Length: 68
Image (tube, rainbow, N blue to C red):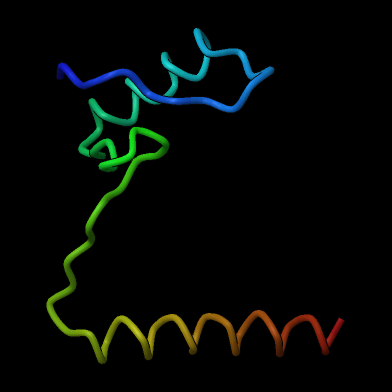
């Protein structure tokens, strides 16, 4: 996947970060418009199910942490 050059903060290892970013691009991520990050859109069959699942998972983790 060809893309324009990424922009990294001064002092960062640009070669390593470029390799890492390119690996994400090969996994379905896309470079953002500024060239400073990557984005990915997730699709759920039901928004309600996704939100309920998230809060239920959070509730379980919270409950287990109290019981310890």
